[in-house]
Image (cartoon, rainbow, N blue to C red):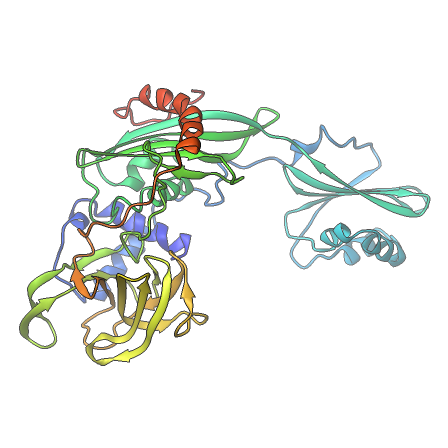
Length: 435
């Protein structure tokens, strides 16, 4: 599911926090659902690019000295370097020489709207220097050295600071996460981090608590963006889940619980982010189309047609096609014992073919109402050795813990974070800056 659609669902849950945590009979009153989703869009949303606020373009000024003869140009839609050079009477031969000077010079030719160009020309319209500000932390500088154009990359290092946030669920993760000072992107990151443990559409409860420690990046004393979550804890229905970022061989770092088990499990709980459970696993359920009692060996997730469906685990597609009341169906085999089934799809993902392999979280199709369905939803089944299990309660296989030597390094890295995390009060509904 795209971030934008995920946020729509998260906002939708925010507007109906407690009701959505309970199972309900599927309703195909699409008009009412659409109206509620449309109304939910009226809630202001923060920037999903993980910027806490607008960053001014002068953050690179300390790295580049601009004199009075510099021309500052704000790139607009439809602009090209050729059109800008023509505007200031700079020879096309100069553009050709710059592009041919270095492979990195081609990045200068690919201008994007709202980028800033700094151009230095003399009285004879000779280009002396050119600077493209790509972002507050990166720019490209071209210098004319006797007709030879030399390119220089300029980077501005950010200052990393540690911040923390905590909150108690009173309404929803979205609403209370915002009250704690978290951005939309951070809330999504938190939900993804604990997505192997908690179904945030179904299992979250009023009174649940969360607290986390994360990085912030600053340039010249001005906040540039939020960095990664370093440590987090979520208490769901009295059960404590935690996660710590551990950098070993991976530059990005991976997340593990306090016992050194990876937060990435073989399966995630739900195939659709933040969707409503419209029908549960049951040995006896009244079928709305067949009008008779029969077992319901899966879970139905109500969602608008076209909502992305993700594979809950990595595996191989063993069926892709139409099958009776299931409609458009896909079955994925995971190793020797596990199989997952996805039914009533409107369409399959284009690149997902029969016998191809898929990764956990990969989009494999889209919600529909093909087959015996009264409205758009996904029917999801989870089987162990061919036996149907309740996807909401089945014990999912856990990851193996870190090897002893690496676990010792993990404990050394995470010990300060555990101490810091313990000092954060989850009863405070605001972020504690500068921890």
